Image 1: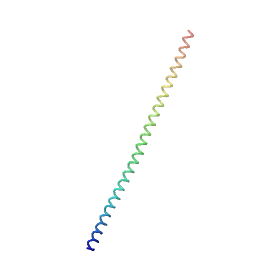
Image 2 (image 1 turned 90 degrees about the horizontal axis):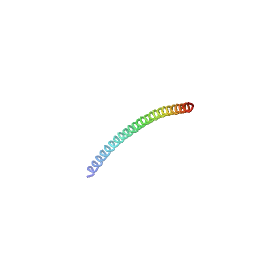
Image 3 (image 1 turned 45 degrees about the horizontal axis):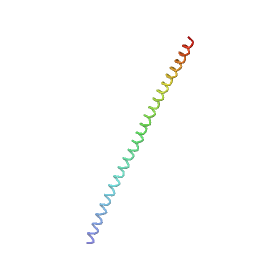
Image 4 (image 1 turned 90 degrees about the vertical axis):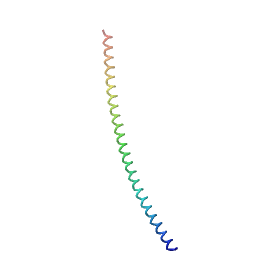
Length: 87
């Protein structure tokens, strides 16, 4: 019986070691996936940031163009109004 108990204990140790190695492998795999997600997250963030900055620049340019056109139209309208008052 002692021999059987020793064998069972040895088998349990082997099984425990195998499970421990599988857990370590899964942990490493998970760490790799987390790193991939972090890198993808940073990449996605940078793309989003670039897109927002680009959109902001387009919006600012469009606003500036509209403002210039409005001011030009306003100035021309004032000049035209003053010209009509003189005539």
